[in-house]
Structure formats: structure tokens, C-alpha cells
Image (cartoon, rainbow, N blue to C red):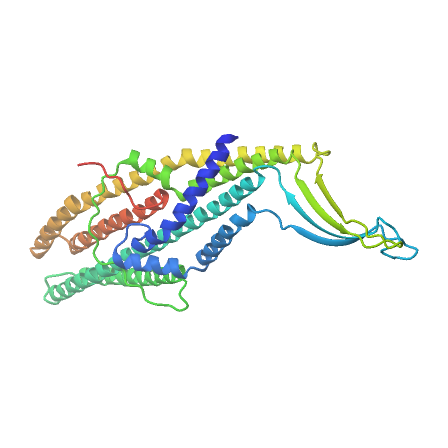
Length: 436
């Protein structure tokens, strides 16, 4: 198990280094890629979230216990009276009667204190990475809700444009019907479309409010504050290097670091369990003061010393069982680590694939489908004006343009949401892109 002891020692240095640099990192940049408005929301959430504050205090308390775990127990100081005769309780009747003061110190077996300090370090290290995982989770939750709010806002904006468009077409239909050039069903069709758009708008407004409430809850605000949705977002031309991203996740994923800290702790506990077969030592030094005896003779004082050790007589039900339990725990946490280590690259690959597909869909809509729909809408309107096309077909062609624009926005916001999910797995911003 020397490898585990070495790994635990390395964990101490890494943990201390991380604790020193983390505050500067967190202040310099957001945990994940984000526009400034979202970055401010994430910073507010990290600062105000009560669970994170509680976890931060827990990490600090565990750090304080590291030197405590590796320190000696307090020495014991005592006084006593030895060999006092019970018939007179006199201190000068018997030569062996003495007043004694002693000091005792318990010394654990060699390297036990170091191992206990290492164990406490791995415990603090684990909680630190649990805290980091919670920070990334909160940042991702805020980002996903924020971009979803942006999509709802885009839906409301396009709904307003569609409503204005249908209202204009309704007026045209009514004018044509009044002059005998149109049909009443065209006017009714326009009214039906307006009603559908009104119902859609109500749903979008309700969804927007729910998303704002969710963001306020994530930020732990004591009262509702409106959240400004993102404006127009630029297309993130990401060409992801999946292999490099998988490597980054295996190096930086906080959940994997949690599992590694559990493996380190189990390794140290095995070493401690093996050390428990060796006895701890209890040293005591005593000074016994004697006075004059009954004849007036001045009696010399005594100095005493002793060493007490515990004998592992019941090792089969104590030390053996403790060692067996720690070995099984190591096997369990190793399985947990291997499982996450093996599945994490697949999760990264799945998210990278999703981002790539959403990018393809977005380009398909913006470069092909929307321009084609615009051409169809123009030709449909021209055909309707010369009575070569029905009103129903014409109005659908007009609305189709805006609905395709909305769908392209859906893909755009999906890209940003999936990027936030990916960076949560990576434990930081995307570092690797393929060279073009």
C-alpha cells in the first residue's frame, strides 16, 4: 500500500496549492463560458447560495482539523499519595509513604500521526471537490435557465411579429371581402390565427415568468426581481476536439476528483488499520516526595518511570475485522472511481455530438430553410393578390418564415445550453478546439 501513502502525501500538496489559487481563479473568470450578464448572475448565485456557503464553512472546518489529527494527545499531569497507613493516615509513620506527582504521555506507534493527518487531508480534499462540483452544477443550472428564458423572449418577439403580420393580412382580407373580391372564410381564418397566437403568447408569458422565478430561486433572492433575457447571441462556431475534451474531463472533472479523494482516504485507512496491530505506548514519569520518619531521619525521595502498551489480544475480532472492512471499502470506492472514469468520456462525447448536431441544424435553417421560406412567402403573397392562391395557403406561408426563424433560435440556444452542460463535466471552460 506504499502507493496509496505516496498518493495521499501528493494529495496534501495539491490540496494546499488548490486552496491557495482557487480564490484568485474564481474572482478572475466565471466557472463556465458566459456573456457578462450571465456571468454576473452566476457570481451572484455563488455568493448567495446558502448550501454553498454551508459547504464552504464545512471545508474550512475540515482544514482546521488537519493539524489536530496529526498532533499528539495532551500530556496528563497528576498527583497522588502512595502507601498511606489506614490506621493513622500519617505521612511519617511508614518509610514507603510518599506524596507523588507524575506526568504521562501517550505516543501512538510510529507514523500513525502522519497517517491520521493524511486521512484528514483526504477528507477535507473530498469535501473541497464536492463543493466545486456544487458550484459547477449551480452555474450550469443558472445558465440553462437563462438561455431558456432567452428562447422564451425570442418566442414572444416572434409571436408579436406574427400577430402584426396576421393583423395586416386580416385587414387586407376584410377590405377584399367588403369590395366583393375576397371570401368571408379568409377573414374567419385570420381571426382563428390571431386567436391561436394570443393563446401562444399567454403560454410564453407564463413560461417566461416561471423561468424568472427559477433563476431568482437559484440566486437565493429574498424577493422577485425581473431578469433581463439575453439579447441576440452570436453563433458559437465551435469545432470541438472530442479527444482533448475527454482528456480535460478526466483531469478536471470535480466528481472524478471526489472519487479519487475517496480512494486516497481508503488507502490511508488501510495503512492505519495495519498499524493498529502495533501497540501504542504510554510513558509515565513520577516523583515521590518523602518526609522524615518517626525517628527524625530524613528519607530520600523516589523517582519512578513506566511504559504501558496495549496488547492486541483480541485481534481476530478487532484489528482483523477493521483491516478487512477497510480493504472492502477500498474495493468499493475503486469501483466507483473506475465507473465514472469509464463513463465520463462517453458523456463528453454525447454532449459534443449534440452540440455538433445543433450547429448543423442551425446552419441548415439559417442558410437554407429560412431563405427558401421567404421566397415562398413572397411568391405566395403575389399569387394571392392575383387570386391564384387561397388565403389559407398564403397566410401559412407567411407564418412559416417566422416559425422557422424561431426554430433556428431554438437550436442556437440549445448550443449554448449544451455548452454549459459540457463545461460542467469538463470542470472548466472548453480548452481545446480542432484546428481549422
